[in-house]
Image (cartoon, rainbow, N blue to C red; front, side, top):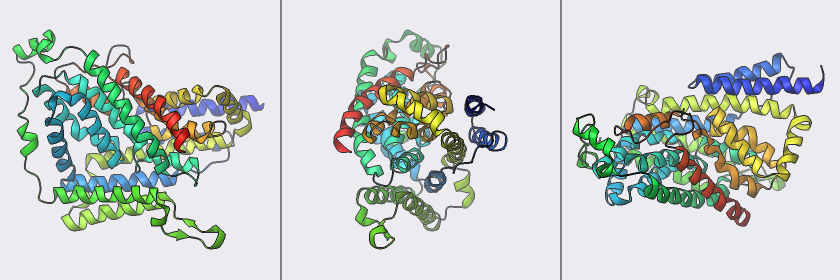
Length: 444
């Protein structure tokens, strides 16, 4: 069989698996990645690569700890505190709500924590007369943009493992966090000015209020004074302490155990540290607060996290196998093109993220190609392009946001991409990359 035909068949399997996974969604997203790997190995005689087991177990450890925190009431405590912060200056909700969603995801390592904030943001916007889409759409975007700023996210684990041992998550965080915050603030300014009329001036919303279609907003005090389990605060603080420990050990090699001896001695890598710390946090939650196993496994964060872990495992295995078997025929020519056209790397990240709806999968598939031709600093600066998962309105957080907004101001659109999240996502992404690329070249 000619080499070009073999490569074409392998690419067809890769693209077909991505398409079927994106179309099927849920648990099947990752399973299609494994099936694609099976086809490459058994039918097209490819040598199987190794899946990203470190990243896989990081997801498992983080969602286990977060699920235990949710079962103990810790997430409810965090949400209550978030409501208090947001309500202190309701006129600035369009800035405070996205930054709160961003901070929650950075700490938890998963954008799924946004679901707990979603009704709070909507009710606070509605109760204060603010057009809900202004805060909701950007908050949803923030919860996903924050994945590239979280020291405990699966995407970060995958990304830093590809960068090599001389780079840590701290190097990435020093670039991503300030760049993303500025990107969200600019997007918030655009939303506030051009996001449409607020509730008092919107005839459509006023008509819904008049005919009783929209329920009256819940009193803000319900969020600020609701009863919580006695251990809720302690549960949240234990989880956040674990995240802080991971961040500090990522920043300072001296805090990590040394492995090896002599010239081969080095600080223990961050992947096992994240796993050990997060699993320990989960155990502490269960022992101290008598959290039952079933409560952890049925928590929304744990269930959605398992799906994300399997998606990461399946597509990293598929992407690694395709890339490893086509270094000369595909990777190098593409890398040469990217070297002359760096924008193509960001576009490829964005497109693959849109197709797989997985930032981790896009990272695994495309970042190695970028590293073959671009500087590490440029790759870091362009990495936020994995927010392309929001190009099509098929992400669970997008659908949930639209369903929560009873006013109808947050829309999915009729033509797939003309949805409420598109402009906030593009503005936040472009501003973030515009700052991150030069900043990375200074820091890294």
